[in-house]
Amino acid sequence: MAYEITWENTGAMGVYVRYIGANSDKVVAEIVRNVQADNRFDQLRYELHDFLECDSVTHTKRTLEDIAASDVGATLTNSKFVVAVVTTRDDVRAMVQHYKDLGLHTFAFEIFQDLPSARAWIVKKTAH
Image (cartoon, rainbow, N blue to C red; front, side, top):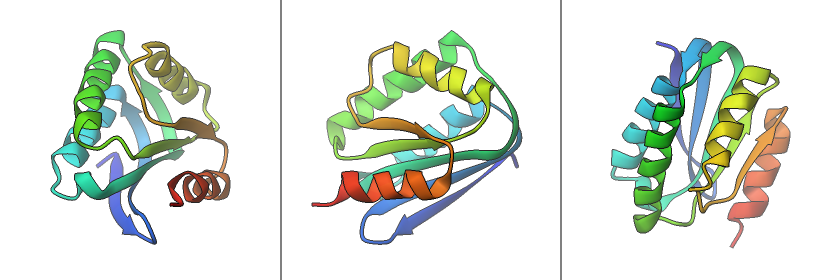
């Protein structure tokens, strides 16, 4: 398996995804579909995608468009979640930038170089 998913509830319901080894946008799409199909999705307040243990990632415009379309539909039922990506890799940054360039996401979305910064941002963004 190229990833691990952990549902967290530390004041706000969230998903922590740790990517391991070689990955692709198809893996991200699979994760997005699984999270959005979960009955806890309506209470979801954050997704934290950790690529620090990722060795490589590939992506295509088509798959990123599919992810974006799925996210548009998901935000119709839950518009209160934020997304943080943690990476030091240029290929992950390029994938995320291509996704952001599609301009379809309506949720807060940021890239960080370390987990503590990402988690601090999540706490700030999900505080009520």
